[in-house]
Length: 78
Image (cartoon, rainbow, N blue to C red; front, side, top):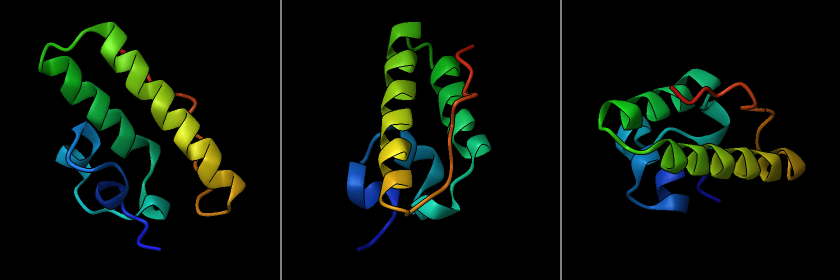
């Protein structure tokens, strides 16, 4: 299994800013950078909140299958 975001999610906000970083190598700062960049681009709070929810659910799944231990619960919406 190739565990990088771009192979799993395609070309989206996450891939724009983290590239082909492996899921298990991601940290909360990488994910916060994505949300901060979305804010700078003028995306709505709802759009950023939806992405944060998607990230949280994805990492919950990753913890369950033991691919990552990251729990991005402190991602802040600007």
